[in-house]
Picture 1 (tube, helix red, strand yellow):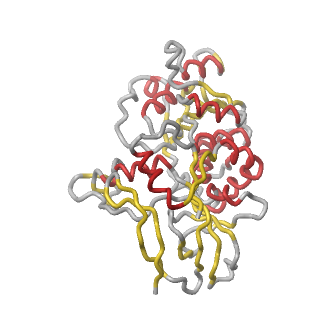
Picture 2 (cartoon, one colour):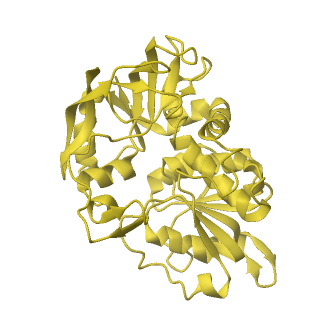
Picture 3 (cartoon, helix red, strand yellow):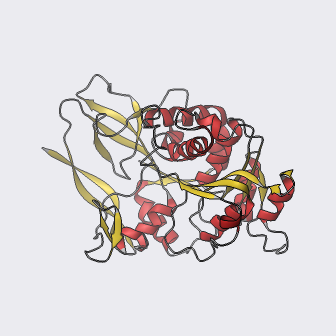
Amino acid sequence: MSRAVRTIGVAAPGQPAILDVDEPDPGPGQAWVHTEWSGISAGTEVALVRGTDPHHLLHWDPELRSFDDVGPPAAYPVTGLGYMEVGRVTESRTPDLEEGRLVAMAYGHRTGTCADPSVKPVIPVPDDLDPLLGVYLAQMGPICVNGLLHAAADVAGPRAGVDAGVRDRHVLVTGAGVIGLLTAMLAVRHGAADVVVAEPSAERRAVAEALGLTTLPDPAADEPAHPAWRAVKERWRHGPGDAGADVVLQCRGHDAALATGLKALRPQGTVVDLGFYQAGAEAVRLGEEFHHNGLAVVCAQISRVPPGMAGAWPRTALAQVTLDLLRERGPDIRTHVVTDVLPFEEGPRLLADLAGRRLAAPPLQAVLRF
């Protein structure tokens, strides 16, 4: 048996819409969750609206885990957008999810879902947390925590904790979108010696500064002779021929940000890349600092933690680190990061405007209210 739900999807390239789909009824060990809040991840979702994500341009071979042109790309409609949901358990067939419990999950902008804790993480939203901020618990926050884990694995191995990636280290964060801001706050919370955020948007730099973060323009359009990477190397001098960031947490899907990160690193430093690129990387010059300074780039993709850490760091553990940050900085995040709250029905219009670049002041974090 199944039941009808409404979901925000993409009917065809450039056409976000509310679609009718079916969800299975809950069976043994499962529960029904009625959605209350859902956050929009603009970069990922706008790519799907535009059709510029790799899966809609090339064929993905899941066995070889590679893109090629020997088969068809992913087709439309896309029925699942989003991964930042908070809902309430209204029917339960498992003692692990009592009715009335507020939970965070990643299942897309849909009015409800059948939750199975054995298949997909279901994170309880505690009573002492603003329920809207629960949108960060299931995936967005863990994305950022996973970035710190990759930084830790680089210096301390698979038994490292989150602190090891940033404690007493000089950290550059490129990008002051939601991921960049949360990642920078996590770095501060977990003991970084100094954290700087490089961001080209003056509006987003103002948000970062309101959160207590130090910022630099990137690139410094008004100071072309003094770009962010140079300012970082002048700020952090460790010895002769040794200046720059210990680690860069790269949080923009733009090759220029990756280029900045590489130039800003001290010798043998690492860029931990949390960005989602949708084009080439013409701004990156592998024959320059990457080669001459012995640098590394590692992708911190949310589907996997660093090798050897999976047992110690399931998604629930990443969510717990996120919860600690939200408990400490929740009011600041709610005030400065969550810029727009709008009804579910207005989601397709917002996504269309974002995809068409029609907004003079795009939201930093938009949240849909159900």
